[in-house]
Image (tube, rainbow, N blue to C red; front, side):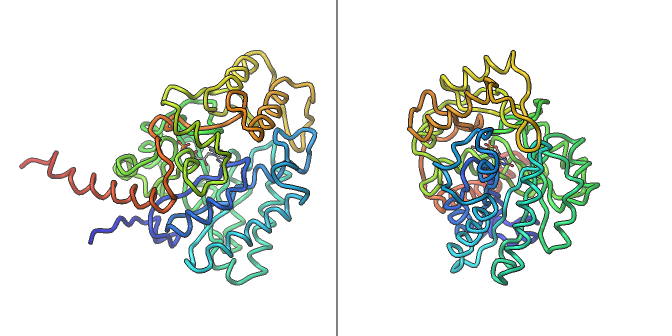
Length: 363
Ligand SMILES: Cc1cc2nc3c(=O)[nH]c(=O)nc-3n(C[C@H](O)[C@H](O)[C@H](O)COP(=O)(O)O)c2cc1C
């Protein structure tokens, strides 16, 4: 039987070359367990956990989402829960820590917590292999490799990929502008970004932004990537931690129904609804705001729109809920289990790759 196997599988000790992207505001604990048990890399998301550090400035209603635990305890408990939920499959998992300048206070604490929790438990040390940093300068984070972690860094351009390579990243995720949530100011999409990055660096490259099925995984491999990272597609799975209105929105939106507006650290891609349209209007005339470490203007209209958008999310008001998602929402129309999804993607990619030579190579 034919298997799909790339260098990424060997590097991370995973069965299939698929990473689950970090996805705040949730901890993505249940999703990480399901993805890891299905043979891909499940990832815990830390960004929302930081909301309890500065509740008055946080865009998320931290207490409603997470209860009273401080961020470091939340992360430690999440790591322990994912280790427990994946014990029988012995699968490998990771943690995502955004390292944007506005978030650095929290980033340092989260990275230290990952290292501490690994050191305290030999099973966690063996299986919590991967740290994915994103949205910021890679330079300060190479240190994590000295603690036995495989370091993955997310970039939106060739310039940033070269910087990550110089800093020593083990894997580079090239994340195109069609992706969900934070995107770069410079709109370079996956079709241009992925092959450009794969040709510019020697470090293995994972493609992100717009991937959802076997054909797109096969395309990523043709463009020079060793695997894909998916966000939006994983939201619409039975196990994912997201609100049901968010899953429904992804199933029902078409590819034109996303918008880019100002988010936490620069632009974000939202699923189009009334809230997202209000954010776009404010983006045009509001000034940037900062979070954790920098002053936040509590009258800031964007912050208020985001805060009330998250309240409406938890209250399941689908038109005024704040929800992020990528253009690939238009290619998603079902709610499979995570294992069904991963198996279908892999089978689909094998089929496309196996049939392609016969279809296009003529002698
Ligand atoms: C709801 C949502 C939240 C996200 N939050 C994060 C995050 O906290 N950290 C991060 O590095 N990327 C985050 N991303 C980006 C994903 O990790 C992934 O790179 C992206 O979704 C890939 O594009 P796709 O949505 O087309 O699959 C988020 C994406 C979505 C859709």
